[in-house]
Image 1 (cartoon, one colour):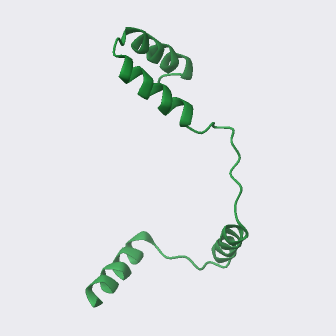
Image 2: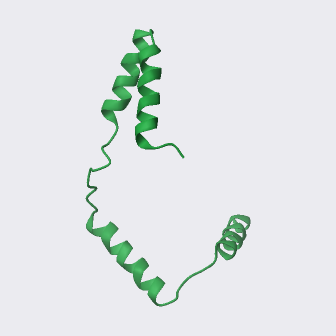
Length: 80
């Protein structure tokens, strides 16, 4: 697997070979608008409450397998 430095160097090499101004401007906008890995996402009260309920369900063993969930969803869709 490529390291971050190898990926970065490869991208820089590719960018240096681009001559299309519009493409470079669009790429610049894309990179500038992307979020930083270090950005902290603030959760709403409701989101935190849902996560807490999920944790409770996991601890209480209230789980369902993916296969069972798929079957439930198909049954629900067929009932519509």
